[in-house]
Image (cartoon, rainbow, N blue to C red; front, side, top):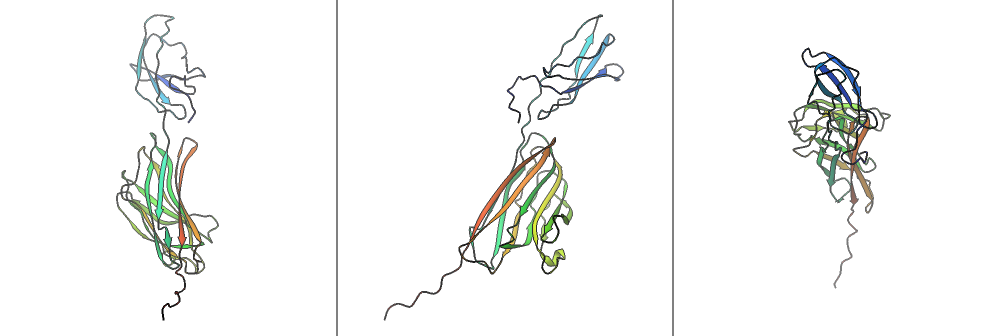
Length: 266
């Protein structure tokens, strides 16, 4: 993320120094631009140095380093290497390449994952519907490799950007079938879902789907043959103060059968 090669001194790393015998915190230090931190003068004795806050994009190593001051004026030097973190998320969306007006359409999601070597907060995957072409009917949530709970929220053309809860407290270990029809959601006659989001909160490194989610929609009957519409899905999470995002799009063409050919022969 920062382009620093291995071996670069790391600033803004915080260490706590504890008295080995009593466990009392005696000093807190932070590395400077040269990756160096210096404690205040300490009494003779044994101490533990523990990393308490890693610099951004580096993994925290809480393995204590033991040091001992044996005579007055002694300077004890020690070093620690932090491994850089890798941040990445993924999602892939596929569906029908061609549909008829009024037909039911299915989208499949795959590769939904936090591929990072760190946990992410506010992790989600989201589907933004091409409402000029389809209406949402049903969601198959899929399953995931880490036990937990999540919720599904949605927006409509009349919600003014506000997210409403569709279903809550769903288990990541169960594959749920969610009725997302206007009747099930209690929508007005002129209201329809424009987007929905599956929200997990905090997920660990290597969090990923097991069974694939699916989305079922109905194609609007008034569409014109030869036109196209795009469905977009994205996934994201926060590391530190930075959003880590990925997007997948799928294009579908609308097909209409031509008029019957004239009869041939005698």
